[in-house]
Length: 328
Image (tube, rainbow, N blue to C red; front, side, top):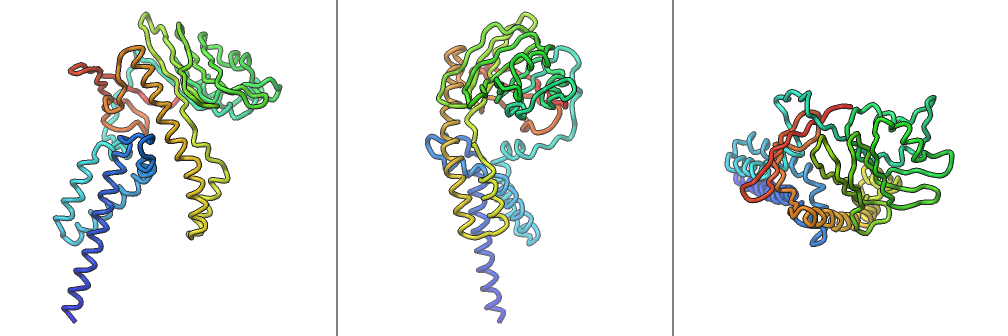
């Protein structure tokens, strides 16, 4: 009996150990999935969506082996977290302290996908909540995506928005596309002069990017306003997800998988090409190769506070910047 129990125990340990190895491999692959362009393989883009799940599963395995005093497995799990330290701390940021927010020489930038301002009007008696938020934000520069205006009295117009945001003397509004009576734009509102503005060329019907030059207290600032390809997930797609969660079977899974493959896969590829177009524009203008791995953050920006970042411009040349994130 004891021999049979021992054999079952060894088998169970082998199965759990194998599952742990698979989770670790998926954890590491998902952590660095952003290194593979969706143009080469969209599989890694999908895999990256599972990163938090694999991270939690890996942590559960570490706790499990720790409870059994299996130090070799614990060490392997901890080493995987050490390898993925960067992605883990970016996704699950932890701050043991918050630096003081500087009071002077601060440039406050707000970026906001306004989604057509909620397709609501704006009056003094019934202010549009999005416009009111922007007006009260105190931002020096405001980047707006899905800036939609219309000719109907039910929609906002350029003049109504300009009157409501009159604290921003300088504006750049670049057309993106039209849908019925609505015109979609990408816009920048600024308290500082905008000397140049133009659209970055890439294929898209309702998305776009623009590049601007601003004069900030005598210094030139290049600003890029991005609205890359949307996933275009609809309420029907959400219903597929809800149905799958409530009823886990092959039929609901097929419905969810079909929605994801039709929306996410193409969007991943299009966004990769659009991001490449923006990077090429920066290289053409400033002879700088844009590589997100050249921007080093202690942790991802997911909460309020001041973040320190090092930007590696050239070999042996870097710049340090502070990014302040606060509630408007």
